[in-house]
Image (cartoon, rainbow, N blue to C red; front, top):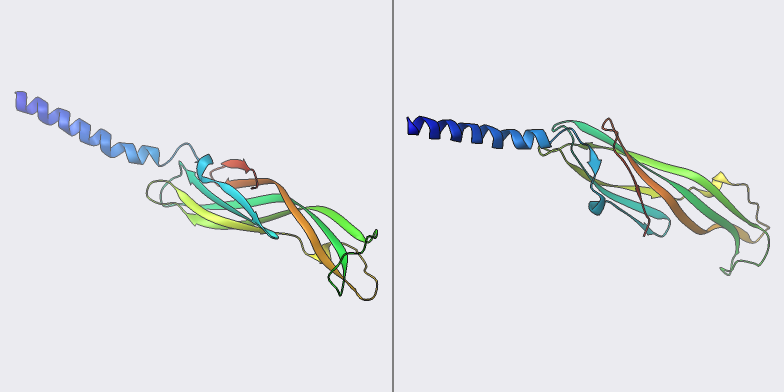
Length: 158
């Protein structure tokens, strides 16, 4: 009788352990904060992320978006920027998306890169001998959203 009880307990333990990973793989979609970052390098921001709590074997579409503030100025052939009013600062929304397969543990990891808007998106006119050039760009409000899970996180740029 004791052997039957031990077998029953072990069977239930085995079922409980087997159900654990399946339960953890869906139900609470969220980005892992310490595994998610946004790093600016030049005119781009690379957003690295990890999302968990997803249904294994599905596909998530992750969108990175940010507010890009750019300053375009007229640059001389010598590479200098005249101290003139012919500069234009614009603020615009930039975004990009990618599809990521969910692994057997209910996770996705990846990177997305956001780029500064092009000069064609402003109306700065430079005098002869000068060229319109991106003088500076900064990114703020970097946000990741995931679909269909609905997970969302705002990431500071470093």
